Length: 152
Image (tube, rainbow, N blue to C red; front, side, top):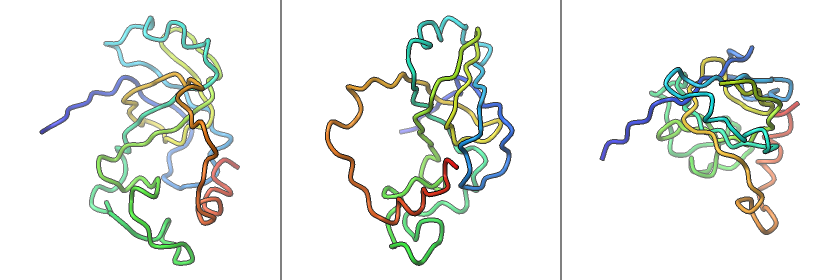
């Protein structure tokens, strides 16, 4: 079965490199494609946070992996790709919860989006607390170490 997706928007920001850390100061503009009217954003500014689903279109498709050490760090355990959030993955999809800064017409500005300039956005959804985990979130120590400078 083939699945075909078209971008609903594109990212505009100053970040052009594929490095993994220091995303905290990046503010991204997300502009809808011409075929989607600005009314698609109606009411979005009533939400503080959004989920952004995007395509890692600039990742190296030949470097897709199914397992390995996160970021190649052998001090961290060898794990499967679905226990990691790296870009070199099947379907090359990214998902990030962002903070909505403002909306103007067919554009929104967000903080905490780890997508580089030109990245195609596949979907945008409001964050509702009822969809967030009800219980305590558990994660391994290595993942906390990995994220130490991510949003710095």
